[in-house]
Image 1 (cartoon, rainbow over the protein chains, first blue to last red):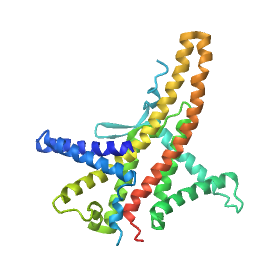
Image 2: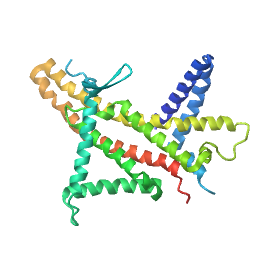
Image 3: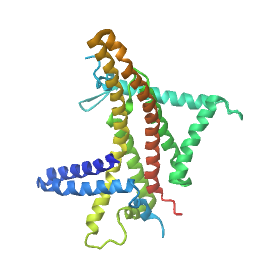
Image 4: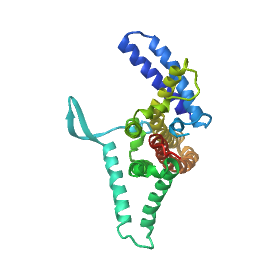
Length: 62
Length: 251
């Protein structure tokens, strides 16, 4: 469960850092994507806990 | 110091195999134990299924059991359509299981205690899901990231968070296996180090007192055996759940 949260934050931080390097807008990319990554991490944890539906449910026909 | 708990994870290079640019690719102890695992699995399955007797021998039942176990897991999580990925999941499960169990033997090397190995496995799963999903559904696959009933104003933000959540999967997938194996082996080594510390510091009383950490090692070893199996199973079942995204049996 904890790795789910950390994974989201790491991915967000990584993407933010790369965008900062490419566009030279440090530290704005890191700030924005770290927050988005945190949100994604929380979403991961809620999926793991079964509170939020899986992404694959959206592909199923109604 | 002899009881350095990190020493067991050291990569030893035996001989160079190839060069890519300036990087030398060497045959390491990690590669050696990977080969050992592959040979053990192959021998186990080939010898186990060689006779094909109706009343199975002990080895044959073990081989059949391993097939049945993974097949049930795949069917229950990814559906019968997921069985086309059975060879992939079975390979992952058997490889991780064997490598974990080899690592439990003293003086051996645990391949899965290095994140590069587990990351390579997790990225393989991730790319398989992504490429097969795109091949199967085309751009409809990206509906994965679009929730229903969200106001158009905040939809881009939500989609972004969903994409990040999808991309973070291989990280949690690989870290879970790697961290469990690393932490377990360090704990065992630390408790083993206590025996030597007590013995060398307090003499005879210390060696007798060393029975306590030794008992702890025995208990931990049982736990680690469970973890070795459980983590292989968790890796396989998560692979099935991720593959289910790409297959989406429409029931």
